[in-house]
Image (cartoon, rainbow, N blue to C red):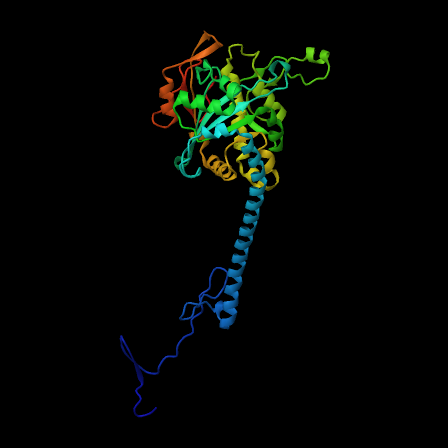
Length: 399
């Protein structure tokens, strides 16, 4: 031992004589899988030790895989968008040409984009059934106002009975569905606006006779039938008179059911339910609106949206409208984001009476209150009479 060395080491707790104890080797900590948990001073585990270039290559590979995945998704999305736009735009251009210029002049300007601003759309359903007694008949069997509220993800429907007795410009007082018969969409727009006072931004005319092909291309629609139905013998599916005579009519059971295009068209055309003679014409209008709304819901579903590049053109064949391709895609997005449980269903109404136009519905003073409910300015209240006005939330009004 050198003279200047001391046989002890100085520790913070004091001195200890004797030889300096050799350091003991600590066993490395191991995780549950038995792997070494020792870390370097910079926090890297032993597994990460290695050449710097190797670590950089590993990091670049992980990031490159993520970027390639995102890039591939964006490419597919862009291709889907281009294909959808091309398929729908051709059909929409034809639908726009079918709408007369006089009807377009009746529309109020749209403030903002459809997916972010409220808008009002007039839905007119016509049914040119191939029946001699209805040859040239262009009445609007279904009249409905749709109000969108994107900020609250809510839709509001306002049904206008086709037999409502109102003033039609140029015709005087008559049933409201006579407006379409006399002047097409233009006069129907003017009449509905005059009666309700509601500015209408867009119009969609749907030909129910063309719905068969549309619904079949969608794979059918699901409709909740409120009560069992057995119709009279119309549109007999058999070829011989004897078979049609023995046939008891069309039947629909109560509850949700998926209908083909032919069956949905028959359901919308039923005028008489032999199982419930108390049904009114509002029941038929309700069936037509159920078919229309179920079709709209199916058209805006995710599955249909994914098929737009292939089926987009056929989906708009039954339509006559001013809506552009961009408007339709925005409307589909608004419909997709809306809550079915919060959807508002309203109807105008009154009392039946005999008029110069036949049996009609004389408008009730309560229609003003219903218009306020439909606009969201007051709480919805249900109808109190068979033909009375009112609203319901989350379900249609029972006829």
